[in-house]
Structures are given as C-alpha cells and as structure tokens.
Amino acid sequence: MRIIGRPKLEVFWKIHRDANQQLLAWLDDAEKSDWNSGLELSERYSNVRIIPPNRAVFNIRGNRYRLVVMINYSLKSVSIRFIGTHAQYDRINVETI
Image 1 (cartoon, one colour):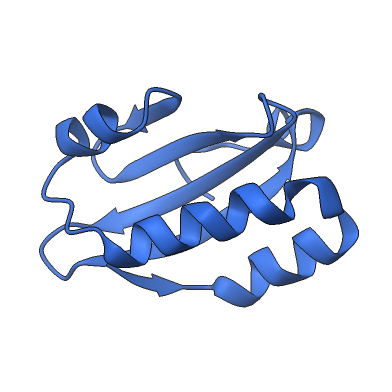
Image 2 (cartoon, rainbow, N blue to C red):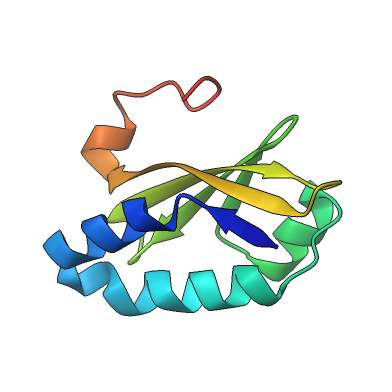
C-alpha cells in the first residue's frame, strides 16, 4: 500500500516517543501489504475497527493512542487522517476527519 501523510506520524512520534516503534512497525507492515477489503484488514489486525466504507481505526500502545486512516483499496493507498491520544480521538468525528 502507498502511505499518504507519513509526516503526520513522524511529527507525532517525535512528541510521543513511546509510540515510535509501534508506528514504525505499522508503517512497515502497511507498505508491504496489499489489502483488498476491511475483512482482510481485520484478519491481519485484531485491534482494528472498520468504519464503512473506507476508514479504519487502529489502537496504538494498548489503546493509549488512536490512528485513523482512509483506505482506497482499488488504488492501494492509505491516507493518514488522524493520530492522537484517546482523549483527542473522542473529540473527532471519525467518519468525516
């Protein structure tokens, strides 16, 4: 998958260093992946929440942080929409961010 918005993650993990390794691992895995559906994604990640039609929410660092992405399965692209604390996540609309 092609990742759009990687700089958002880099800025975030410079501030929240405890998220660095898990976000780097997620990026590496996502770039090597070829997801075709939310079902495939949920089979790979037990902690993902699929928001139809094209969003996914990942728990990072034991649910301390949340990563929201928009996935275009046909174009094989993942757009980083949000990365933040659980409290910040509670204040957004995951369907429109």
